[in-house]
Image (cartoon, rainbow, N blue to C red; front, side, top):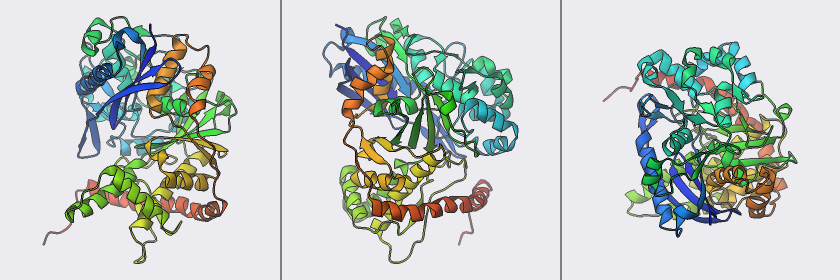
Length: 524
């Protein structure tokens, strides 16, 4: 009996294969740590073939946990990290290492492109602000600086598209990444006008056809079957970008329209549901994403601050370094527990923290490749707990900043991601946004969202709404109300948070010029 769906989620930190039964119950998961390299000048690259080998490893490991997995698999569904550029040649071989969404090399080119009046038209068509993460910006940089790479390339993929190619030999992408990068979000097609504005009309040949996973699929090739251990001919479904599948699995699709979804992962992803194109709100700053959902006519309107748990990881790293130097060793879980205690013992709003710690700067709700993190208001009375609380408050203020750029605040925010299980962070986000918080107990929302697309595509459910009723709604926790007194504190502080990042932008530019100029200071 074909009673298992495999969701593959090739993320930035981890590559996972997750098995679900047809009613959405998670059966088992196998994962490997993803590997990529960072380069001088802001580069972040990943080996395509290694990514495929790691994915194969997770599928084979999953088979050790699920009896008779190959025979029982109804379909494999694939999602992965968004944006970036994964180039292959006519023979299907990588042209170079993939450029990830973390890559900042196109940042200053994006500054130049966003200053051109024509970029507003591009934004109105795609519904998406241009930033250094995106394939359009990265291809434009390559055209100017490394044209020989594009000359060798035949197809420009995203991560999930590459894995779909390796499993099926088909060169396609999905409507979400296809339209928010190069298309018209209203028609869900590529736009020649967008390509002209990006100065990429001569490279349209690189763009693969768009495939809708809820209606069309391909099958596992003999070679991929031999590598993964699955059966030749098993249906393979191309999911939407991980930002959409994660929000889908965590509960964004709610026709009431008063629901937001926040995923606290490496990045902070804040999404509101738009039931139709006319419900999309385009802001004056030309930032954010408008992403087609695997629901007819519906969209996920998204603002994503570049760094979320990256800030927490940085803080934990500082603590670990000090403890290690003193001969103590604590696990990450132990450090997180200690961090939570420090936060609860500290005063709310005693510091401001700007959570822009990624080397790629910021993309939501403002775009600035030079944005950097920092504390404001430090004095000798502040301790580690105050720093820890300020970091969490900075993430909550970033969430509020992002939601406000998309219109009115949602009445309910559904949280997902590992950090969403932190009680202090949940309370702080609730108070900062004045939203009721509900946490999904779905452990692997991204893989689940991809598998949901497969479940609808195979006819297990008549619609995505029916699928959500069984896969999502039962896993939503109770509503947690916000603390009114804490909300008042954050209401008073939030305008200063916004004013700070606006005031700091010229400072960030000056520091970036110093870095780019190679000034290292005097040596004694």
